[in-house]
Image 1 (cartoon, helix red, strand yellow):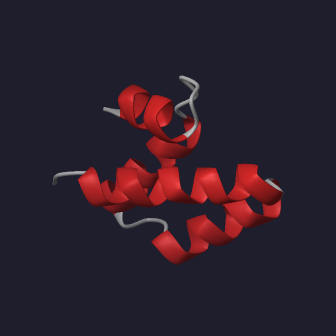
Image 2: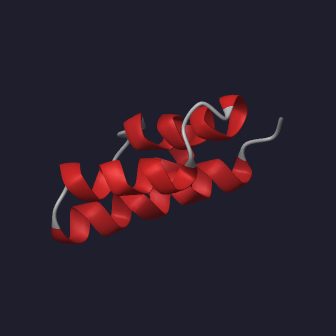
Length: 64
């Protein structure tokens, strides 16, 4: 549930990075490490850390 994860971690219903984490796990087209690096390049400071956490949580919770 991307919305619930985003609300829990970001405090806002912004699901983009959660969806990317789930996509990475479901398809194996993007590595988790590569995705986390992209988040670091796109965001700064706390926003980067929170979005990385969101990606990781969505990745872990994705069931294939």
